[in-house]
Length: 313
Image 1 (cartoon, rainbow, N blue to C red):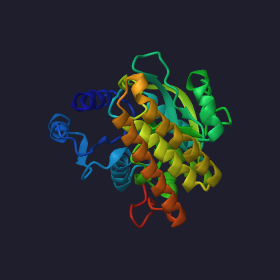
Image 2: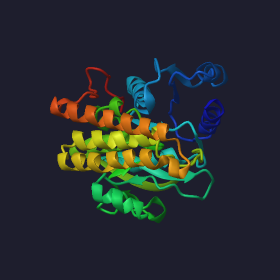
Image 3: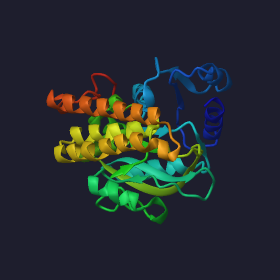
Image 4: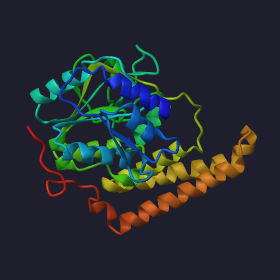
């Protein structure tokens, strides 16, 4: 990610919003990224996370440091992005200042090339919604709108985490991202907690960045799919949706086993798919055990004034 991080940081130099402080969190990169950023971008606060903490843990390190130095708003930005509109942060800040109950906003994001809108609006997970998504519909029984169809600021259930502006007050109230997710579904979890606390999420269709997400083929036995499935189970447990949790396990685990059994027919490695099924079954058993022990009833990622000083207004 060394070169993409450099492209991202270089593009941030064009942003016209002041005052601002760019914080780069290195999540234990083995390629010398931290040292490169420290030398090549001296105005950037480049800090190590202390290990590979995943997407959630790395973001938490950056968010915590931003609040420590008095940020009123925190922009969370993927490293595989480049700014295409220098004024987007100012627009988002102005919108949040005018709408004090909005805790998070997400702008219009382009996918891989300018002009191709990435859908960054997410709905709450549901079993019915998952089936609808297979049919090309939205992942929400509420039919969350698609980003490309939204022309004015709009309330949405949740937002993709590649580019977000979050109010410091909301972060103190809701807490950090839950590190147990590691990656994927973490923003949905935070947004759900924010909803319960009275903070809204709005999609504001101002051009912002190009997300240079790599194009790769879908693999059912991928690490990404494992986290998506495991973390959906965690989310159902955290939100007390026990029937949905059981249904999710009852549907997805047999599918994983069937994939392993029939993998040779499709030229796939049965061992790889069998390992995936075992890994998924183990993860699901852990989620159920944690739920029985009451783990999900106890917040583990809270943040407050005792930990972080109040932001300067």
